[in-house]
Image 1: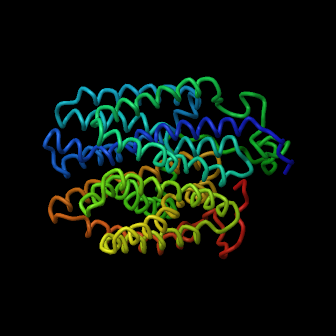
Image 2 (image 1 turned 90 degrees about the horizontal axis):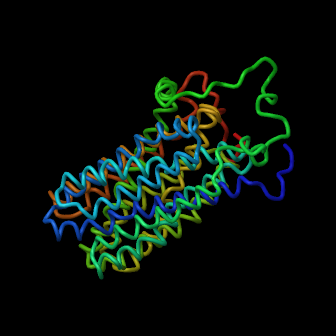
Image 3 (image 1 turned 120 degrees about the horizontal axis):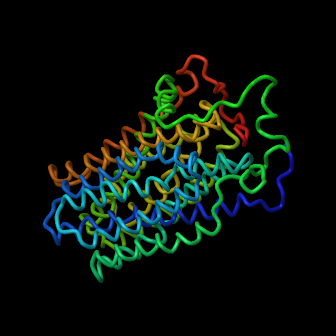
Length: 434
């Protein structure tokens, strides 16, 4: 492998991508602080508002594979421009909302399509397209944009919601999308080849010439063709199933319901939002560390450890509320370090099993499973809260699912006949370019 240049344009693309994902994270932080104000103004209950969040999470995930294919066909820059513009318009439309069906359409569908087009599949595409070396580390950094968005936006949005109402929250988030738009327009580039470069850290030889003699590069697959490729492999179902649990135990449950649950236990809304932001701060360190580990260790054992720790944290959460502030802080620290650390090793396994060329699109379908889990948890927790009067069963069920996922991921690499993923023991390195 050739020594990477001291500076490479890939890092500018990574920064622009991070800012784009940061804006998306700010928009996606809105439900956590809007659930209570919407209930108070419109008289909607927790279950009906959770339906809108659930639709959003589901559409957000399903759009990912198609967005990845559109990025291949039309380029990163065009897709990002269109998505950010649609974000601002759809979020701004919430200002004129009067009925529940409008919330379902604007937040559930339109915002989901726009944010889903600049979400984790964008990070995966940039990491695979622009980086040969340090791919896991870059994916960890880009994934941490969601956590950084919580740090920057959640306390601010919660303060605005409490002091000025929910409509100024909408205006702030729409403005953020419009601010990122000219930055992406000026600096985003579609691929290294479009400006005469190789991916960061790539050998001097082209990708094609580095293939074995007589072997052609695999063709790029469409979103549906990638799905057909995935569903034929047992490893796809194991990765998608574990990622379903990841979504159910993070975005669907904690991101959506942690603040309302905390308020019901006597924690002020701004304080609860600040605790959620602290989780985001810790998650930056956890996800970056996960990216570094993904480049070096067996990704299956990393996932096993992450799901095991998350399950223990969620099983502890109902008791943490009873222990007061310090018990809740213990949960925040333990859970925050593990929040979305599963993303880099899941993408790493997808690229190992399905190849660098089609791995991100197949990963998009895994992320769709992630968002099905998110939608299920967002709606299910809202229904359980309305039915039982608290969130205890929702938190405990999610924790048990995480323990189940910890066992599932060990089977990856053994579930598909002819899998390209070698069975490596714990501690065996995973090449950075895999």
